Image (cartoon, rainbow, N blue to C red; front, side):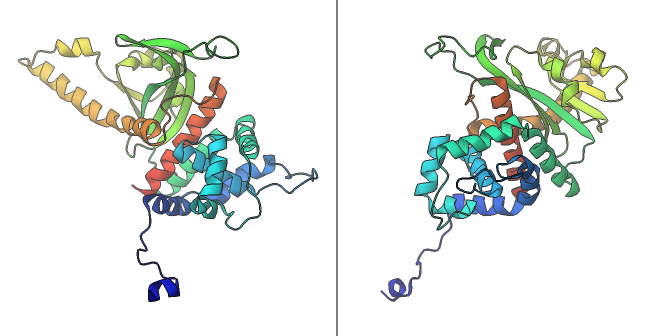
Length: 317
């Protein structure tokens, strides 16, 4: 009874969500990101009349909450009204008004229109490099398919024309393909490219390199990458996996084949670094399916989700 009168909480336990937000509050370079966005934001150059806009940092924090918990614009608006924890995180605790779903949507469109997602990713990478977490001596490349709705029951009566179908194994998939380049030592993402699902992995290999690495690793889908025109004159040494059919024909009784098998296992252990970002992006952040129509919007979201992955990795090494 005394505890109630004194306003003491008998169970001062922090939830996992609260701990996560405290970590993000510490590791995300908010001031750097705000400086990138501020020149393009409403009210940056002249007053437009009406109510004053919400602060850029507030809208950026709201946008991050959307990505971390895979929330739509209307759902994000409701969460701000329902969760004091979210309001404290974005700096609107006790505020007289909250941004509605249209305001949230316009901020997202601002990031897409000004192509700020690659700049934000570069800013995070620069921060990690200064901390010594991004060595940039080697890159692992890979790609994964992100599904898109194949239904034609929509206003246009057809599927998204920028998506495409592709066959993986014996199964057909429809959607886009996310190509990423990650640091071979830390596994942190430094480059992200979005294409239609039918674009071959090897065609994007050169674009996934940052230019400072000496070695690059890829699976069997990157066979012949060093012979492509865009890789001519490159000093990067490619370590590409052997095709599965050829690897199965290796004879363990032969010394040379045993050495080849050991080399393949070593390459596979390095390439494994690229699988972790895909798991976090698809499972933790819920980006197993596209949210919008068109490659531009979905690629921008993909880059922002990968930026969130960097932030989480920095907070929890």
